[in-house]
Image 1 (cartoon, helix red, strand yellow):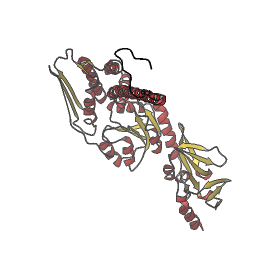
Image 2: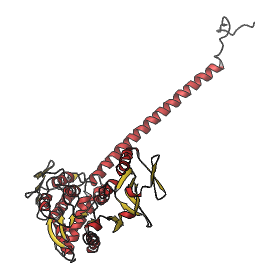
Image 3: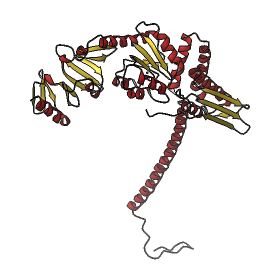
Length: 440
């Protein structure tokens, strides 16, 4: 063995072996895997943070949109109705009301898109709102709005005050109460804003050819009374803005036709009509379209959406007049032989003897007739059964009513009428058995 250079020593024993290749690869894989999952974790963390930040921003936008939506659609439609009536009467207040409404809508649609708005514009908006309420309510309430202090350059969130003011009107105005008061005081100081609202909380009940009207808006009462004078078959009897007074009157007096608002402070028009012992023909006058279905269930002659024109009013009262003539010009014996139902925009007389069976279709009923086209009406099974003689008609299924005299056979819970098979519901089997037992 050759000698080593000076200063170097020969290692004793065998040379150390390098680590196996598999171990090296595994360590590298583990290191890269750790880095990969670390990157995934931080990426997920960042995305979650961004998502939460976006949710927070969306929440703020939603809250702002909710504030902007605080303007009650009922108030807007009633305001338009009031402006329409004032213009028909050529009242000078109509132009002022239009200016106030345009200012209010401009603020909500355009100015209120920012997160903050000048306090001066907020005060102008409140002023327009109060002036419109005064025009709409006329002299049925004492309304006062006082504002003091200098707005200067102060900024506020848009529509932040209107909720409190709307509530003051919502719970402080009731035509059934003589001394309704709404007082609003807004004081601007160097350090903030003081808003004070005062009202006398009105009672809210749980629960109106001669013509009556029940509507909480004086201008609507005036318009309908004026419209009635255009038709010689209408005799205007009485108008009421107070449901309590209207109920007392109708308990002692009978009328043929009632114009009725739906959304009233003391009692809804629907509850009002249901509470009447004697129910005259009914025409709803309202700003809400969503109650149309329920009006059919109450057999309302028509449904007038405010504001309505004289021609639209004529169509409604003409239907009422046709119904009145059909019912009152027939003898009692004749009336028991037919049924008056509303179809589309008219009234149809259905002869009871022609009915084969009645079929329920969601919110509609299909009256199958002998030798005639079926009649489709918007009515519930329950409402129709109340109009039929229980000895002559029987409900055999939740979707079927049949005339007893038309039943040809009953076999295995199937009724046969004019070749049609009608099922007998489990809950109605006893009623069907009782009818046949009685006839036997």
